[in-house]
Amino acid sequence: MFSEKAKKNADACRFCYMCRHLCPVELVTGKENNTPRGKALQVSMIERGMKMDKGSAATMYECLLCGACTADCVTGFDPLVFIREARTEAALEGLTPPFAQKVIDRLEATGNPYGETEPKVDYTGIAQAGETLVWLGNTARYATPDIAMALFAILDKAGVPFAALADEPSSGCELGDMIGQVEDVRAQAKKAGEAMAKAGAKRVVVLDSHDCAFFLHECKDWGVELPEIVTATSFVAQLIADGRLSVHKKDEIVSYHDAARLARDIGEQEPPRAIIAAMGAQLHELYLNEKDNKNPANKACGSFVRARECGSAIMGQMRPDLALGLAKNRYSDLLRTDSRILISADPQAAEALRLCVPEGCETRDLFVMLSERI
Image (cartoon, rainbow, N blue to C red; front, top):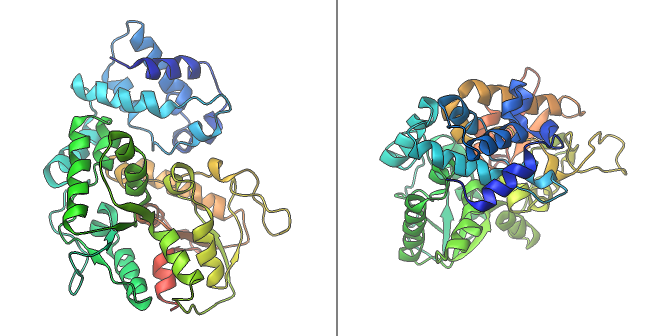
């Protein structure tokens, strides 16, 4: 059964077309049932007696939960509420599609969507307890370890004493995305908080924006006790501002991808751009990013809240075909600019963008790039 909040949002969205052009998934598939409106219509029909079937359940997982629809809604409705609850309903009814169930099984068995048992990050010489704790997240630990190692190198160069857990548990974020914010997810969040406390952390520098948004929002709502939570981008930007890092500048034209949970859920846009500026690069904003009327080379128009998401770790594991289409569409935004270098500042964005780099283009992670300039 759906909550009253979910039903209210679904009924409000079911006949509204105003955000359909912003949905990155629909822009790949071209299917109406992939739009927030299409999903809302299905939820409203289920509430009015239609039984959820395998087809409607599958469409609920063809969504990045990126929040473009929510951020752009002038009436304040949130499709993510009923999409998450629809995933819970699908799990309860045994209708979770096989492509999603395999990821849920991995999360429950290993704590990560890849089904890996050993992290690829080298923790040699890294403290396991300390007041400043680096929280890497599953993607950096298992899919993009170069980003984790780059962040470690940056902190070492800045003289920051830090710890990082070799046995870092899952935050609960990914399981929550897959089955809704149920008690099993809260239990994982509590274990993450206990791991932070055991390490003696007073401040946690979070690399993955999905984890960070989860810690700042869901964990706060549930009363899970956590230390101070900061993004890795804001922490490193402050190190540069404080003069603790000497950065070699290089004049080049680049563009920056705003990861949805960093830019929209957390509301952070400036720290990554400050780091890029510190490296001497000229930033040409992507389509639907910030408009800059003072720079004629900037062909963007819109706002950060409308920026297109390029994919996620979970989508890459569930639907590789869809993940590829999402990444290709983001590169099409890059090709509208004078830049051929696309920078990201989130491990999941980096993993997605590495799927299909067009000829003549380059994708870089912000932390890897910075570690090579200090």
